[in-house]
Length: 347
Ligand code: KG4
Ligand code: ZN
Image 1 (tube, rainbow, N blue to C red):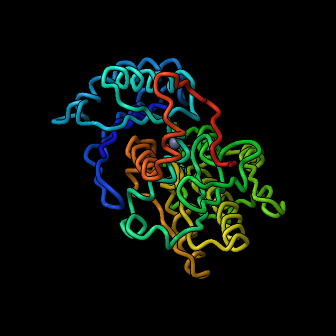
Image 2: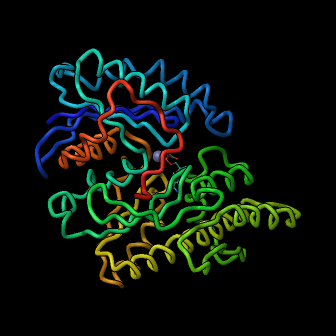
Image 3: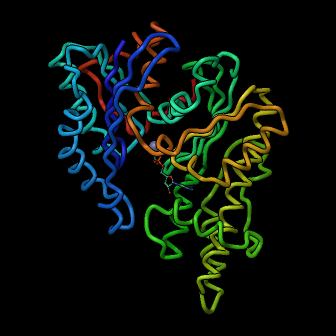
C-alpha cells in the first residue's frame, strides 16, 4: 500500500509518501516548505498570506514528492482536513480532491492532532514494531493551537481527558516572546534563552495545577509575565533570560505534573509527547525522568517531526487503513470539506 499525504493546516506546506504492509513500512518521501521566514515580519501567521503561499508551493512540492512515482502508483490519498486555519486547509484539501478525481483513488481525511501523535511512530522503531505492548497510552499533544491530554487505548481509539481552557502552551511561549521582543515563533528562542537564565528568579503562578481535572490554563501565566516585567525599571538581557527560564519552568511543571497524574490514574503503559512544543528540551527531560521513576515507557518525536509535516499525516492514514473498517468509514472522496475545529479525541 502506498499513500500520498498532504498537510497545509497552518504555515507549512508539506507532502509525503509512505509505503509498506503491517508494521513494515517506509517513509519514501517527506517534503516540507516552511513559511516561518515570511510570517516573521508580521509577528505571527497571517492567514491570507499563508494561503497564497500554499497555492504557490503545493504543485512544485507535489512534483518533488512524487519523484519517480506516478499518481497511478499511489493507492490512497490522505489530507489534513482540520483543525487549522480554514484558508490554509482549503488549499491542501482542494489539491487532494483534484488528485483524487484525476487518479480515481480514495481520499482519506486525517485529523492534524492525530497526525502529531503518529509522529511518534515515525521516530521510534520499538513503538512501530511492538505498539500493542504500549497501549493504553497517554498522549500529551502540545502545539501553537492545542494543549491536550489524550488517552489512547489503541489505534483510532481516543478519549480526551483534558484541554486548555484558554491559550495553548505554544501560544503562551509565542506571547511571552512577543512581550520580551524576541520575535516569532517564540518557543525556540524562549527555550534557548531559558537555558542561560535562573529559573527561580521570578516567582510565577502555576494556573490550574491543582484543579482536580486534566484541563490547563496558560493565559494567566503569560499575564503574570507581563505584570512582573512592568514593575521592572530596566529590563536587562539578564532579566530577559531569567524570565524565559522562570516561565518555561512554570509551563513545564504544569504539563509534567498533570501528565503523570493522568498516566497513573488511567494506568497507562506509556506516555507519548507530540506537537511543536515537543521540541522543548526541558519538557522532554522532565517527562523522561518522571516516566522512568514510575516505570512508564516514554516516547517523543525526532525534532524533524515535532513541527507540522505530512509524514505524520501519512503515518496516521496508514494505521487507519490497517484497520479497514474505520478507513472505509473515513473515506470521503470528493464530498470532503474542511473542518477547521475538528475535534477527534472525544469518541
Ligand atoms: O505543531 P506546530 O508546529 O504548529 C501548530 O500546529 O500549532 O507548533 C508550533 C508551536 C509554536 O507555538 C512554537 O512556538 C512552539 O510550537 N515551539 C516550541 C519550541 N519549538 C516550537 N515551544 C517551546 N519550546 C520549543 N523549543
Ligand atoms: Zn501542528
